[in-house]
Image (cartoon, rainbow, N blue to C red; front, top):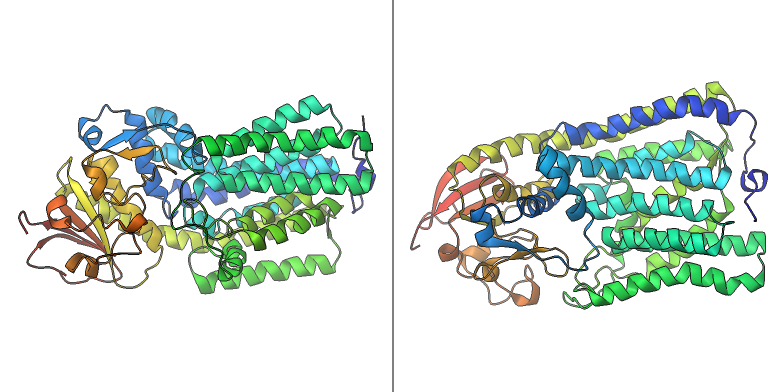
Length: 521
C-alpha cells in the first residue's frame, strides 16, 4: 500500500510543530469560529441576501401542510434537484428549535465544515496539524455569502472534507475509495452542482499530480479512472433524470466581465471601499509571508490551479436555470488551497504571532459584515412592525424603486417574512420548478415570479409587453392591482406614494414602504 511520505509532501521543516500546534489549534479554531458566528447569531435575519427567501421555503416545508392558509398557496413536491441541502437539513431541525435558529445553525454548519475541511486536507497531505488552514476564516464571508448562495457555501465545506478523504484514502483499496467518493458525490449533488464541480477539480488535480510525482503502476490506471469517473457519471445521470438538466432560462451565456467579478467576489462582502482596503491588507500580509518564505504551496496545489483556471475561463455565466455559474468557482478554489498551503510555524512564539495576526485580520474583515448586519437588524425590526398591518393569508406584491441601497439583496427579500409570520403569498418567493421543491398552486402560479427579481414601480404604472425581469416573458404583475392585497416597495429613500389613486400608505420604514391596494383600483 503506497502512502504519501511527510518528508516528500512537506516543503517546510517539521520538528516539534505538531505538539505545539495542536495545543493552540483547538482554542484558535473555537475563537475564530465564534467571531465569524457573531453576525449570524446576533440577528434575526443575517445579512445574507436571499437567506430570508430560502428560510420562508423552509417554513413551508416544516409546517407540512398543517397551516391551511399557507396550504392554499403553496405545495411541496420533491424531485431530484441539485440544490436541496438546506431543504433537507433545516425543516426537521426547525420543528425542534424553530425556523429562525434552524437557518442560523445551517449557515454556521457551513462555516464549520469549511474550517474543518481545510484542516482535514492539510492533515491528509502533510500528516500533521497546523494553524495555517485557519486562514480560511478570512473568506467565509464573501460576495457568495452576502448574496445568500448558502447551499453552495455548505457544499464547499462538504467538497473540502471529501477532498481530504480522497487524499487520505489514496493508498487504500479501489473499492473503499470508490464507495467513499460516491457518497461524497451524491452528497454534493444534493448540495449544489458548483460544489460538485469543485470536488471534481480537486480530485482531478490531485490525481494528475499523483501520476507525475508517484508514477503509479500503469495497470492500475483504468481502475483509478473508473474510481474517479463513475461517481460523476452517476451524478450526470441523476441530473438528466431530474427537472434541472432540461431547464433553460434564455439559454447559456458566457460573459468576460464575470471572470473579473468572480475574482473580486472572493474579497467583496458589502462595502466596496472597505472591502478593497481589507483585501489589500490581506494581500500585503500574504506577500510579506511569501517573501519571508514561511509558506509554500504543496505541488498538488499547483495542479489545482492548472485544472481550475482553464475551467473557469470556459464556464458560462448562465446555464440551464442558473446564473453566476462561473463566478462561484474562485472562492471555492481559494478555500481549497487553504488546505494545500504548508506554513513554517516552527516555534511557539511564531505560532502565537500567527494566531494574533489571523484574529486581527478576521476582526478587520468582520467589521464590515457587522456594519451591514446592523443595517439589516433595523430594517427587519421595521418589517416586523409593518407586518402587524398585514392580514393573515393575504397576497403581497413586491416592487422596487430608486437606486441601489446597502445590503439591497437582503432587504429586497425581507418581505418573504410574511410567509412565515402571516401565512401570506409573496410574489418573489423562490418557486422555480428546476431549482426548488416549493410549488405555487393554481390559480396563484400565474401571479408568482418564480424568481426574486421584483418589477420596478414604473412597470406597475404601465406594465410592458415584455420584461427582462421574468422568465419566458411572463409578466406576472400585469393585473397586480386585482391579484394582490398589499404592496411592499423597496426604495433607497422615503419615496412618496407612486400611485395615490390605487395605494394607501400603511407603514413607512427604512428602505421600504407598505401600501394597501385599494379594492377595484
